[in-house]
Image 1 (cartoon, one colour):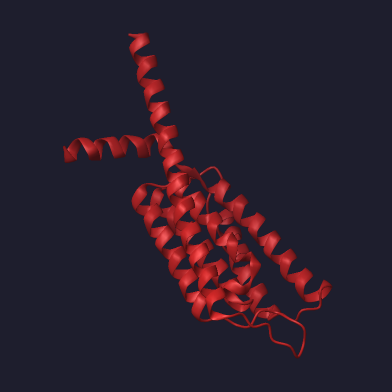
Image 2 (cartoon, helix red, strand yellow):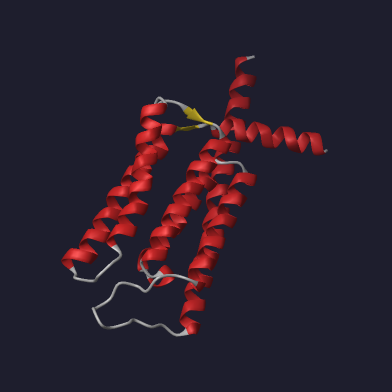
Length: 206
């Protein structure tokens, strides 16, 4: 029974297909552009002082990783599940670092932590999806406890009640878990449909 379950899981993973390096690189470039634009607008256009050097340093880390992978590997290269999980884990850590510098869960952009988890759940096997989800929930939990002040008007501090902070933590944690389960389930059903279609075509061909 266990062998059959393992074979079924292996077949599903095979039908999911590997992830191209180009796909994750393109998504990371999109994140770099969006993060840079948000920091520039908040700091210069809205006039809220931000730790500009720290924020740009965190964003530069993502840009340097992209440049390294572009120069080191072919964009058409297929990533193993472990490599893809490592890339997505880096994106979560980088985003958590940026949120730490800009108010933690008080930052409305903290909801973006859901994005890399959803991507992982869509393309990775269950064990890697669970690890990525756990990392995101851990990051959200840390940010709920420690972070730098959210950028606000000079001389003023924006404070939130503890019950509100707990509510934001609960909402983000449950959202991360829900979207991970939902995306993984949808991807699994898609794999099952393709598997059934392939089996039907094979029977018809015979």
